Length: 422
Image (tube, rainbow, N blue to C red; front, side, top):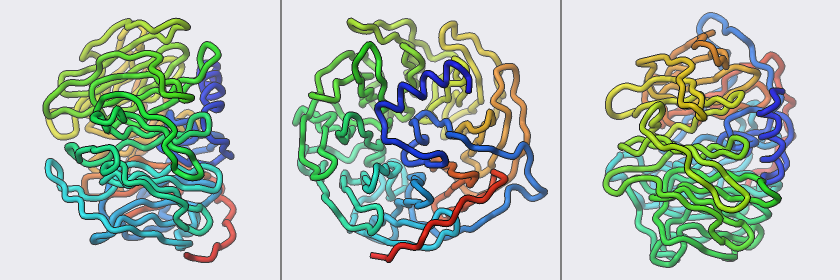
């Protein structure tokens, strides 16, 4: 494993749930940085694209799936029900289903389904619905352990697109980008087992960015991008450890997650916001640069690779988007694939797995020298926004109608035992 990435993964491991090889239990994978653990990916695909292992219909929503020990958790909306389902990750066979009524209607965007990726921790599943319903379910049965109506309790408005930030677990607390600025509840910490409020902090609205975490200078940091700030919080009590302005008022959103590289942090957004590069110091932090160049990403979180960043510069809805690799220290662009189109991406086995919003799946080398495409295939014929997930050589991708399981690895995972449905 590359030295810098290895150090980063080791540090992040201390602040996230323990995972086994092949798990993808939360947004952007086991370490929340879009790097898969111990995956072997074929360097080419057969004619017609990757083998389709199974597929099934899904409802509305942009939430990608989570996978833990070959149990897949799907979060979507069918009719007037927001539904959490557990499936056998290898076969797609249903295990259990849990549903709750929802009445949200999209305004700026017609989507009315959940956006936040489920979070699996030990024997529990946490979901954050589009109207702010935060709940904990038993992983084996789907039984509701607890639930909270965060928007009602903390006086939160729906925002432009409803809820879109996946919670994070740091130091055995569930930390959520709630956005209750009138209640000093921009970020709220909940107990894992009971859902009790442990602390609340920040007078800020929520964003569509999901938080990350880091262990630096002998302490833990929970790092959030809210509506208007990039903030580091002490997960013990919610105290602000650092804060920078980030974002703009008006019809804008912060969608990409913060990226920690060593003692540095990167954030990016479109809408005239651009990129931010700062340093986390033992006493305070400092801004190094902020600029719309070289990366202003609407919602794709870039991937760190050997100290460089690979990601999308541009927007899905307006203009063009390019795939670039650049050095955040110097802002030098190492390579750029212009007019690539908007996409989300992950890294496994030194390869980039790229899901374009036009439904095209691309495999490329994770190279710092040039864009080197290995394979490409049209998987969907519709706009595809949900984040892909990779587990034991199987890639899970979905649009607003279909969830597909594609074989990218050479070995099939072990089929888990069937669990009684709820």
